[in-house]
Length: 304
Image (cartoon, rainbow, N blue to C red; front, top):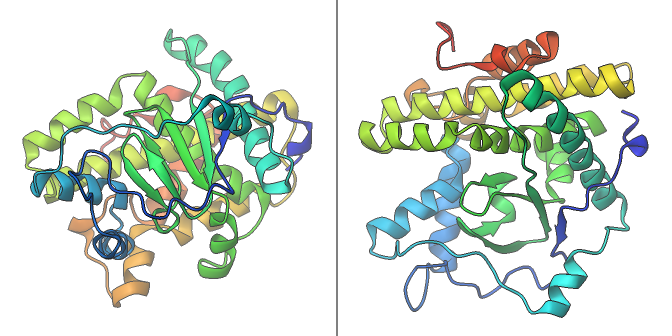
């Protein structure tokens, strides 16, 4: 992927090198917050079940009486200014370039296709741990989007983990991960995330019905990543041979069925929250082939 030709986004907040977030309590979690042991256990559960650990941690805080609302990390002006400096390392430059290209694509595509103006998200780069509007962000969680502060959180070490743990590599595989999280922001801009959250709460939280809604959200984000890739390539001719296969490899590697089989030897479809490998690959290609946001309506699709 010729990402070096992309514009670098100014909406990057680089918190790497700030100590890895050690000693932070869970925002809104009472005097002591959640202990690190509890956080680690919830992260492990997230890996096994496919549930976003940030959701598990937030739910645990509410159940134990600590859910007094989330608040993002605040920093003094000097720290804020330092965080806004453009990354100079390769992974930081890459993340900023991919984010910049998603901005350029969605600022044009979203109003043209939906009549809705696109508002940008901020990408927080961190190392080890930091604080988000949705609670503590830890490297073990993987990348995620927090709708409460409208930010994407990415520990750039995840790219190395993709290669070592999931045997997936390639710049477009990494770009797909970022575009998927930006896809959640697109859903937020369109008002989809709030509606789904209400339906999940009505379904009773972590139930098969709520999980099915989560799968539809995640598959839509995969599809929107495909829409981004198609429109980006049409305008900038940025894709190279093998790039789409890299995205397919990534989508396959992080399917719920494959992750659960690796972790426990078998898959439990009712517990899926992101979709199977086949579903994730299929919906990315649906978006890529059409280039149309309307093709990503996973909620009306007969087949997930």
